[in-house]
Every structure is written in C-alpha cells, then in structure tokens.
Length: 188
Image 1 (cartoon, one colour):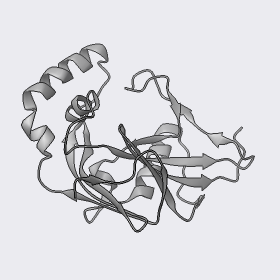
Image 2 (cartoon, rainbow, N blue to C red):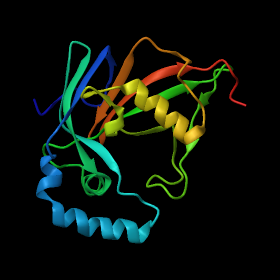
Image 3 (tube, helix red, strand yellow):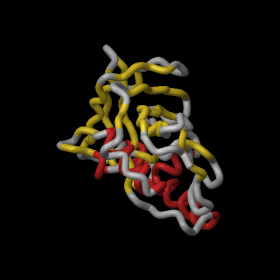
C-alpha cells in the first residue's frame, strides 16, 4: 500500500481506517544510533522535551472518500529524527486538527508554548496520534481532537456539534485530518 493519496488538495473523508500495528516501525528499528544522537541535540536545545510515545505511519492511501493506513508506536525521539528530514521512504506523519468555530463565527486557534517544538506558532489545537487514541487497534480521530483541545485549551468538545465529515490535506510534510466543531459560546 505504501503512500498512495493525492497531494496538495483538500479531500473529503467519510471514514478513517488507520490501524496500529504491534511491531516496531522500520525507521525506528533501523536508526537507533542516529535517534539517540539527535535526541541529545534536541534536548540540549530544549530540555523540556519529553520522550513519550506517538505514532508514525508506514502506509496511507485514499480510496472512495476513505483514508486507509497502518502506523506503529514510536518514541518521540524517533519522530524528531524523522521530522528533521521527512523524506524517509516508508514513513510519514498524520495528525488531526479540530477546527473550532465559536458562536460569533470566530475561528479559535492557539499559540504554542515556549517549551514545545513548535513554540510561538499559531494554529488549531492539535497533536500527533498516540496509542491512547486507538480503540481495538483503530484510530479514533475525534477522541484525539477532543483530547488535544482539552489539553491545550481546557475546552471540552465532547458535546459540541461537529461537521458531518472529515477533510484531509496531504503534503510532503504530512497529512492533516480536520473536522469543524461548532461551539455556541463566543470566542471572547
């Protein structure tokens, strides 16, 4: 399957079937020394970084308005080495954005804190998929979006009206899956 999806266009997505594989990602397995060396540099520059667990894709395709793929749990340090290059065959990143629209039609974005890798950047609250985002081996995109918005803003989207479908944009730097959430309260 590898990576077979249109790039640089917004795609309608009715289903996401991305499965967490039990084995190691080949990128992490084959690059242990480079991962350790890069992690030393990363944490020297930003000691607040935490070597938790995220997922990295080994395959993703788009067919009949569905995203279908495989991913593997990797240490954040492995992800950071991959992130520095992104042109590694057999490895890509996907993440989800909850596009929060307030009752006054304002879009609600956040500025990333100084201790993060994306310090100072402004975008919709988001984060990499983590093993806790999977149910019976299948990614729960809405759970990820709700979790990330809660962690980064304190807002709870669990009961908020959401758009009927997802959308995706795949580029050379990764694939973002997004969905509109509409809050009744104003942005203020």
